[in-house]
Length: 114
Image (tube, rainbow, N blue to C red; front, side, top):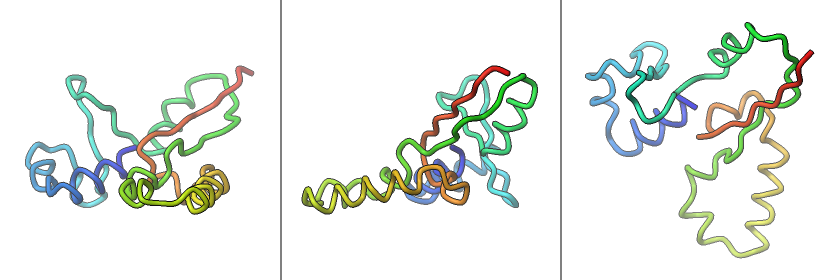
């Protein structure tokens, strides 16, 4: 997801100005742009929705596979088993919330043909 990349790579690793210089970030909306030669495709859910609108399918699930875990990986590594289990429970409770999807690095989109 584009927003997670902007947060982690752009701001977290201090590369935001480089991304702007390479025209990979819209400085008003902070939408990320990908080119065919880039390693990753960066999108927001609305981009995926537009792409999938061309297919005769029904969305069953759109979920965050890693949620906020990548952002707090050091804290996760340091958690005891009980705390980690609570984090997993939290993740499973929030992984399909639309307001949380943009923070995940990866998503899973499940469709059924109509």
